Length: 415
Image: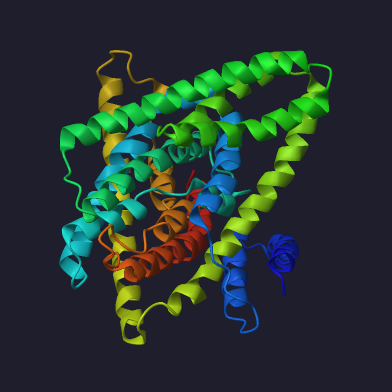
């Protein structure tokens, strides 16, 4: 079976099983990952290897752009303190926590390799959380915080990953240089996003009567922006997010109603297909990585992945509830920095804490690990890192994913 035939086959299965998931009242991600795992175990199906660079290019720009385009800028600004705490501070804290577990619990893992594992698994995937809680009546505040976190945390995780991999290859890690580079990456991405937003806005004026050209340009520009930012070594993630926020404001002010509806219909189909493919691809990878690990190490590595999942969840819960306390304290100070709308209640805090699922970004950057170092030696524990990463992604989506709808319903019932 040719590769394109396999892709069509997977797309067809994805559409069918999405409809089945709706019928049996199970979250789409759970069903699609299970289908992906079943496909991966079919002997006649060739291994579907993911090219990390292609995955990042195909999935990240449209998903980030769509989320940024649809998020309320006003709401984003209201919850900016919480979003930054989760998307930046929590990412680095989780990297450290997982690194400690890797260093002291996984035999033979050095600090530098442990930080690579921590960076890979530090960022959450709100696509999975929103997909699982769709239709459960999440508050607008909770949805905004989860989506806002996912818009920024990929950039933080990718920076942590870059420095961690560099340390494995022998590059000395200097805190002030790393901090400066992180700031440059973020500000550079911000600048590229703003510039591309202005260029797109002026370009759309030339085609204001041609709706097809306008929609086509809006589809193409996230990919162009991401590639341009990455080419000059700044954050493509931040660049696409800023582009999406800029276009959202322009759309609400300038776009006619008919164009908005056409654009919405097009993006809904695109995002539906991309989201479905993400979860099937995640499921397919598990049977593949099983073959790369010594059979005697499968159960221990599954145990390590479960331990890391629990630790990451506890760190997230601690940080979310600490943020809840900090916001209440800031509101009581009456200095105007924290508004009433920005406060978190118990329900928000529990749901946000339990929504820390990992997804396609963790999988892609794990697979992007170099096979060899510059001196020709194999990258240390590469297969172990990939296996644990895939296992944790599955633990979070299947474990937290199956229980999250129940938690949301119970909390809504108590209100």
